[in-house]
Image (cartoon, rainbow, N blue to C red):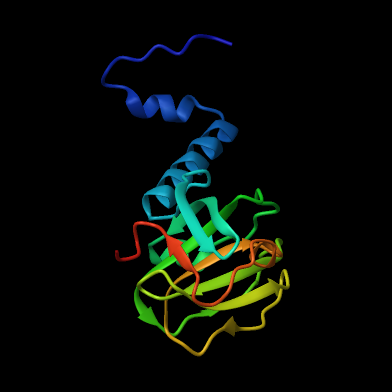
Length: 169
């Protein structure tokens, strides 16, 4: 293999000299960067959240979904989540919220909350990969997804308080 030396006037020649496989990887990297810039959340960007129940305060690390692409994807295609982690969907206004488990491999508890951070409904043990529509009648400001069984384990009930900056004082 020879070293490719270019003058400043020859940048296009460099692209022509690259093997097709290298061009494919450059193209794929550009697509990933564009997707990230389009508001898709990075896995691993966590914020603290606590839930106050009759059994005490329970601390979690959550990813917060705020943009439309993030809200639509949620935990789809994830195969696991630590027990002290979750995903918080911030709808930014109280509204009718419908969720489903399409392309979601992890069984989940869905905790529906008011603007004040009060639990207003719980859907326990949502079945993975199901296209059944899940929700509650009351308009919700946010939904917290936890691993299935966590809500029961911490004794979570309607009326309990969730602490996170998206909720008012």
